[in-house]
Length: 147
Image (cartoon, rainbow, N blue to C red; front, side, top):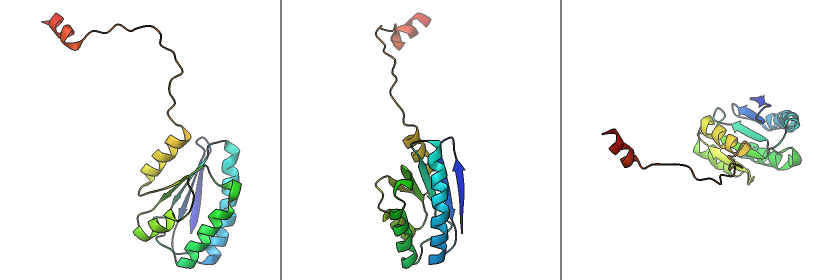
């Protein structure tokens, strides 16, 4: 019903949820997720979590509420950035209600991973100071020399 993949070098935890869940599944998932998130935090900051719920689809209201409550209880175990991957409109609405300011919803793993990577490894401006002008010639001037 769920599987985890940890990429320590990024650090990124990916969870894939499948099928329709019961409340017992949510309890099992929370225990396993807490353990995986604790491992994730061993590898440094910022940490990211992608959850792929495309194979599971929308859940029953009580399961969706239990998942939302579980996320709220994670506290310091939460990853710095969370991406939810879903294809279903109702599942997307459920994912949007997670209530995490650092969470985004995507329709593909490629988009989710791109977002996570830009959060984990933001493009930083160069620290090089260029204090000498470079020599440059206009393209039309160069073309005139060739003819």
